[in-house]
Length: 252
Length: 300
Image 1 (tube, rainbow over the protein chains, first blue to last red):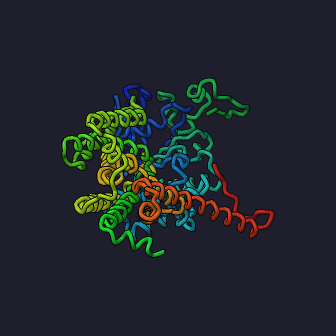
Image 2: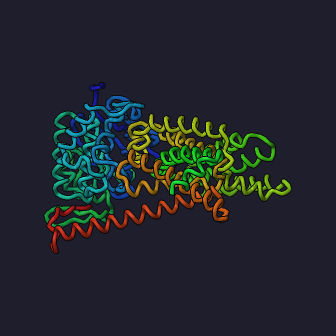
Image 3: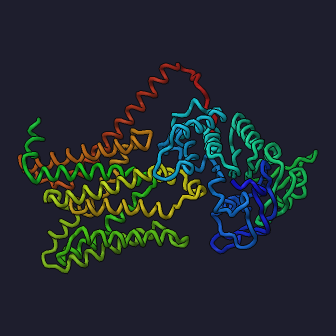
C-alpha cells in the first residue's frame, strides 16, 4: 500500500461538467488521519469536487493526487458514502448485504463474499450500533440508521480515504453521535475524511480543516481560521446572517 | 380436473408449447428481476418492437427469423447504448423514437407482400403452438448462457442497480455492465419472439418480476418466485386456451391467453398482498391497544 505522502493533494484544481467549468482553483492538502469539511451553498461545486477526487469528473486543469497516486488508481482504497436519501428505500436488499457491498472489490468478480467478509461486515455494523438489524430490509430503517449502515459499508471496505456527501443532513442525534464516534476512531487509525456539509456546528465537531467553496475556492485551512463571519459572507453572499455574539447563520 | 392437464400433454405440439413456456418462464422471470431493479421495462418494450423489422425481412426473404431478430435487436441495443451516453439526448425520447421507427420499417417490409395480414398476425403475436424441437433447443442454450452470465455477475449487477454512483466510485465499468444486461434482455426477446410475437414478450419479463417484488424481500428469492410465477401462469394460460378452444369452441389465441393469465396472476398476487398487509396491520393494532408503545422511528 502506498503509505507515502498525504491522503489528498489538490493543486489549482479546476473541473468541468460537459465542458462547462463548475469549479476553479482549489488547492490544499489533507494529511492521513486528517479531516476536511467542504462548505458552500447548493451548486457551489462540493459534489463536483468529491467526484473529481473519485476520478469521475474530468479535471480541466491543475492536479488531484489521492493516496500518493492518481484518482482513478486509488479508487478501491477510497470509500464514497452517499446520502441515505439518494438510495431507493424499496430496493429488496438487507442491511447486511448493503454493508457487504463494501467488501465486493476485495472479494473480486465471479466470487461470493466468504465468512471472513461477513465477520468484517458484522463488526462494522456493530460499530454503528445496528448489528441487531442485520437481516432487516435496508428500506425499513430510519433515515439516520440507513446513513449509519452506509458508513458501516465504508468501514467494511477498509478504505484509507472516506468521502461523505452531507452525512449529517437531517439525521437524528443518536446517528450524529454514532457517526462522529466512528469517524474519530477511523481518523485515529490514519484514515482521512472529507465531507460536504451545510451544518457549520457539525463541521466544527467533525473536522479540523475547512474548504469554503462557491464555484471557486474562498478559503482552505484550519477550521477556526476558515469559518469566520467574513469568509462565510464571501461564500454565501447575502444569505449569510451575522448574529449577536459572533454566530453566523447561513441559508441553504 | 386432471384431464384438463393430462389431455393437452398427450398432444405433441402442446407438449412442446409447455416446454417452451417453462423455459421462457424461468429465463424471463430471472432476467425480469434485473429489468425491474434497473427500471428497464421500457427498454424491454423497445427491444421487442425493434426486433420486428429483422424478423419481417427474414420472413420475406425466407431466412431464419431468429437471425433477423438478433441482427435488428443488436442494432437497437447498440444505438440505445451509444445515445444513452450523450447528455443532450433524452434516453426515453431516443427509445420511443427507435421503437416507432423500427416498427414502421417492419410494417413497410411485411405489407409489401400480398395477403400479408396473416403473416403480420403471426409475427406480432407469435405461434407458440408451432414451436419445434430445434427452437426449444435454441431457447434452452441461450437461456443457460444468459442465466450463467447473470449469476456470475450477480453481486456487481445488484450493486450497480442499488447504488450506481457507489459502484462507479469503486471502479466498476458501468457502461460494460449495462451493455451486458441490455444484450441479455435482447436475447430473451429474440428467443421468445417466435413463440410469443413481438408484442407479447414484454409480459413474460416484466409481469412475473413485478408479481415477485410484491411478496419478496431479497433479490434471490425474487428470482425464484418470478420464475415459478411465470411457469405456473404460463402453463395455466396454455391449459385454458387449449381446453377452451377444443371443448368449448372459444377460439382462444394461445400466446395472448398466456399473457392474460400472467396478468390475472399478477392481480391475484397484488390482492393477496394487500389483504395480508391489512390483516397484519389490524392484528398489530389489537396487540398494541389504542396507544402504540412501539419504538418511534426517527426519519430524516
